[in-house]
Image (tube, rainbow, N blue to C red):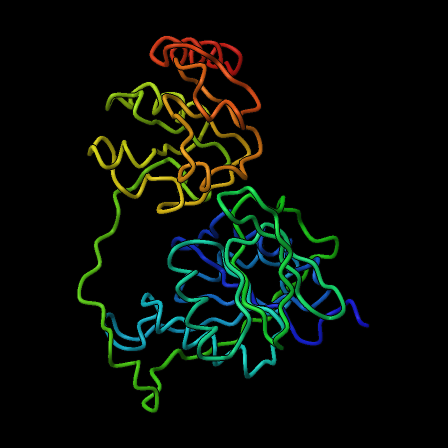
Length: 333
């Protein structure tokens, strides 16, 4: 049987203004490995500035989908509207795969696509291959204790890929992407279009730290911080990383809930995870066990996190972290 795809691979090009989000380049690298034509989907304006990077990543064509008026049923900032536009495009182009990064919004889009197109959906995948003409996705389940391989048996596969799963690499043969304009208009025959409208949108404050789900370095605090995240933030800023937390820390109000890592929070897979005052409960481990290198700092030598840590430090985080930050600053200067 064929090990190649019959249709193109569509990649949702998440971006902030004109800048591609880092995991998108990983998606494009994964898309090229599937032996199909790589096409991108871009919502809104600002595409021109990203075309050189997309060409370097081997994208052959980019569909630029226009936005409807803010708050309208065609506003692509709504996951339902974005999914409706992507579904229409995927069916029209006879795509074999739609690839998205594993964010909360994109997993909601993936669910919509599965319902509207009958596609097989895999979320939080860690790798992709083509076997016998079918997409096969690797993913961890049961709090990271099992690794599974999921073969999509439908004509269209929809897969969300976890950030940091595939090293981003440029294409061996750069391209000059063709830009195709597509209007993302509301479908009057689709009754779901009138069910949700965007009433208000509040932008998050600008931060130099990467998004938690995309960061290659994550510094995480738990109960042991006793609410003081200052040493963790200093270390994260030095390493260009993000700051995360356990459920206890967010429930106590020490840090915002969107920083929670675990089965009921964000799933991360950074190159480096540093846990300070984190016990390593099962629900937290399920959201970080796929990390590349795990460093644990805890005053309790019996903490479960030491069972999965690559490096463990038994000590007071308020002593260890300042020393670690000071030494790293010396080495990096």
